[in-house]
Image (cartoon, rainbow, N blue to C red):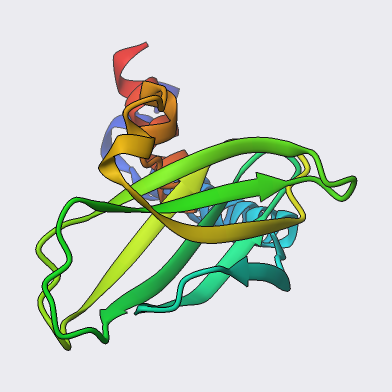
Length: 172
């Protein structure tokens, strides 16, 4: 009896090895996914100090967190006035621990009817941000803004990182 005859007819050892490799791959994938998620969560520290300089529409910040290089802000805006809010902008000024303004972002608030509430999300890519100031400005003040200040960048979490790795694997 030849070696190739056993290999050709008896495939059980080959399938055991295949399933062992598949099992190792699945465990490594789950472990690396959990570790990447925990690492990115540990990088972001909540911004506990922020200043909201707006009286008429009610602006709340539900989540404000920053890492050494980027961060995000989430919250709601509710129109507590009797008039519709049009062509107004929320202005976010970001500061370092030494009170240096590292950047400004704007979110357009348009067609906000009385007693209406909207959610907002803002991503920023500024370094060493420790606190922020939120204010409301008119459209005239925003005309001098750069395109980078008007762009709202949501930060990419573990899902974005994993999808980039998968796309890189298939297209590189």
